[in-house]
Length: 541
Ligand SMILES: O=P(O)(O)OC[C@H]1O[C@H](O)[C@H](O)[C@@H](O)[C@@H]1O
Image (tube, rainbow, N blue to C red; front, side):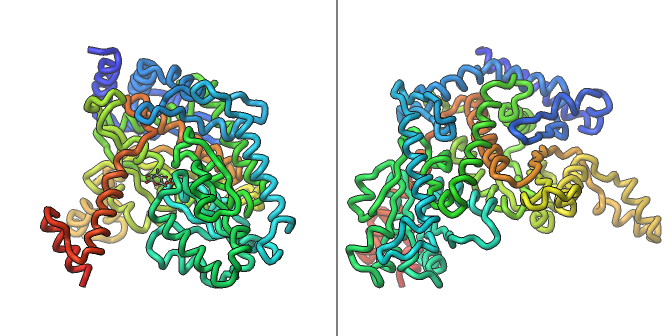
């Protein structure tokens, strides 16, 4: 038996013990719980004390992290080694937000100079668009940007824009991801081609949805612009600049294959956001992420926020068999955080084999879902409170939803008080006896109280994590997203999987092409399964 299996077994054994005592009881027996399970990192505060683990469970989880050599793997990541072993690549998104004098190497090749040069080019482009030095073909300043991309080329930049955009931006930034032409039609509605910049974002520059949408946008521009003026309105962001240029982009911004799509928002993938927010704001996002990198690199494991967040999830999945997690960001600006995390976590850690190709001996990444608070409370939270399946919750709570409100001591209390109340309700619950007493106090008869009390009982003892952000500032948003990136990495280390490939998305892409071929031929191909063939026939009429 390996040391890792032993540590996993130990975690499972302690978790079994923990499941027989309630979280509220843990506070009573462990006065140091808040101190032990609260951690500050890069301006954020994480409260992990409402998780089910006892002090012993917490220690068992830390032991597991140590046994899996999280520190060694972390050094390999930051050292630019082949961390993505199925594609033979380094994984170096931290290099994108490092200080100008940093010296990162990808598989031994120095990369920091190139990163700085690209950053400078983006900054210059953003400044020039803002000042009107960079214009469209008719020398009119750009007033709108259409950002075309999907997956990692969409979710991160979109989140940044939602979180940080001014109420009345000078640049009207719109995003298009879906191959449904309605998405593009809505994005182009009301825009003037003369003053619109189209930014096509695709790491590979081969993604079907993005290329189809890019064609639509090009056709729309071409109705008003001459072939000569067109390239000034088409910018490509890609790791395959030759493809983007051949397609017609007048200008390209690059990034390298050591930046995974879902880890790419720190690169030129966020060009349109950097332009629309202003470079100074985007730089503050990078600063926040860099502060989290430094924390992750230097903090002891027992006070390391990404490590502890990962261990809480591992404890839930491996120790308690809880294979889902709901994320509730209590800020309208973070409403797309669940979607961002679905790609980050489920694409990274939704794996069934270990790094060496053998079957996993753990459950790996859980289902992640969520809605912004308070909206989710009025929808699926019923099940989180009273359903028979325990779903750990994660509350991302913002003291002030904008910098402007920072002088207000209470901040956005009506918003955050709801988050605290939900976490409290999940943990404390309400006994049947309490529910019955309330009913009697409200005038119910004994029989009525007996009948209704079970329905009004909350089992409680349901775990949650709370992440506090003082304000929805660029730095805090950068730190939050970097926190989740490193958390995802740590989980991958413990589960011994490659978090940086995504072969699972390939089969569907290939089959979609084959189905389109059948559509062109006018009938389902021979050998197609009967269900798919029937659906295709019905759609083709
Ligand atoms: O940036 P692209 O090459 O267009 O890729 C866009 C997205 O599609 C792929 O199918 C992957 O699942 C994602 O990881 C990627 O972010």
